[in-house]
Image (tube, rainbow, N blue to C red; front, side, top):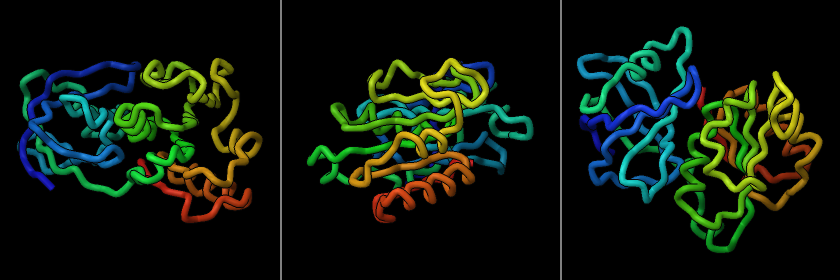
Length: 217
């Protein structure tokens, strides 16, 4: 794990409350699915973020959503190009198995909100990946960087409007549509969603060793 300061390249505003922070990569090696810790200089508080960029990108990017009581998320939104941030990492084992990729194993990625971050890193890092991505959000405009996914592999579940591919919570989509017991399932996001999805998938016969989770918030 590296501990240092990384320079900000810029901010990409995705919605009124969500944005991507881009940092100089500095030759950092990481595996898609790992996370880093960011904090402001001279401040103790820091926050873990899954890497949002791909392994081949020449920068590091993280996806951040401003939350009402989120001190770090509000301050990161104000950083400017050239600013330095405290940076620890990368760490974590929420990664894809090389053998599964080489054997064209099917992956089903299940993410709520900004929990989509590691899945974008997977898709950008491994062209030709055999995947289906289920993204659960409240409103369709929260489909962050949807253009980066294959249209037939991206399913947007919207709970508060009918502009997604499925109107309802992501767990409801799982109940009605997902029956593959041979795929590898990766879940990231709200802890309640993850618990409910785990129970649903196990009831459908998915073995526990094919279920992988990263609690995002």
